[in-house]
Length: 96
Image 1 (cartoon, one colour):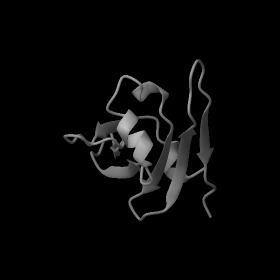
Image 2 (cartoon, rainbow, N blue to C red):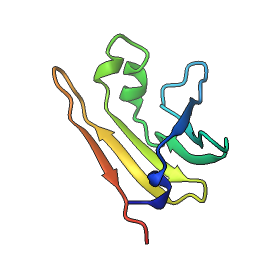
Image 3 (cartoon, one colour):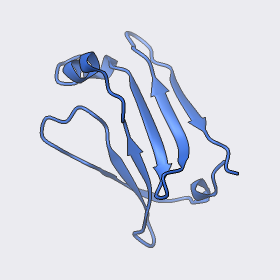
Image 4 (tube, helix red, strand yellow):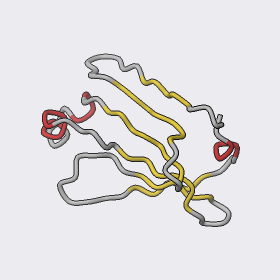
């Protein structure tokens, strides 16, 4: 597990935008207010973008990459298309 994840308390700030379909968040240290991580959804398909603006947003798949400020991949969160139940995969990347 990446050493940056050993903290107990984080502050998460959503990057909002008008007509933006992707999920984008910044993660800060709650004590020092220093930005630690960025969460981005870089590869969003055209059909997923269209469905994000409808009532079916909850059913759309996502693949969020969480990176350190140096650009190193720390974690990935994935979910495929869902109808009744959803399986979310959280993949942590080993630190060297």
